[in-house]
Length: 322
Image (cartoon, rainbow, N blue to C red; front, side, top):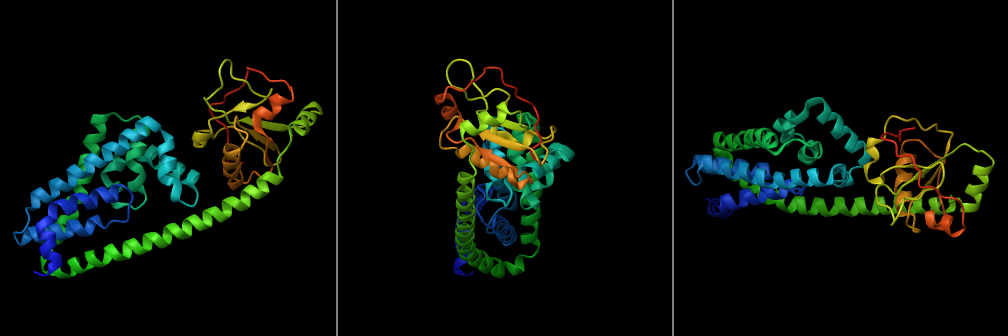
């Protein structure tokens, strides 16, 4: 038994639990290889097959209960967080929602075998309001199926244990290097794109005076209030004619069409316009180009003494797809 195998045999259960936790934390940890190794070690009598599977399943349940709870507490926001590293987070969330709408909690039975789906299935279940008992009744068999499948592979092909151990050692190094490169490239690309967009966005701002004149002349403008459910003290104030949406849950607005030719003006309560910039970028990804922020946000409008109202429409759906 080489040094790697000896180490795996001594700390097998602990390493297995740690690898599953790392996997469920969205780190590139080859938990399947650790489970294969555990199955092979069980065949040689160095570990217990049932205990290895039980450790894997229990670790999955503990980790996924945390994701489930996060989904119940944060709703779709947790899906945006999980999908944050994808090329198009909004589409990622929508695809996840479509899959869950089609298959429901049955998704949990196979999600661990599907890269990408395994990261969103559990928090999506919590966000969908699935009860805890029902969640466990589907999550546990899914974790058991995944664990038994890989442990059985190791048990059956135990004569290849040396190669598995070498692959685990190599995968640890390769995963760390690959992760560093991917994160660096991702951050660089997104930062460059975001800075370029912000420069264009700043140049495209509309002043309160310009918006007031356009409204007075009867131009067709969609004004979008991005204050969501967070309002200042007293009655919630808005620019007359604005529609209020929750910028943290853009995927829920999908029924009312926004003509591509219509000009859209966004504003939020913060003068820095960060929220407006984020929503504008989401709109432009859907082909809606005439999107402009209100310079200075709602506060700039108020500072000029322009009219506001507490009567603001909050649609349950608003098409952000153009």
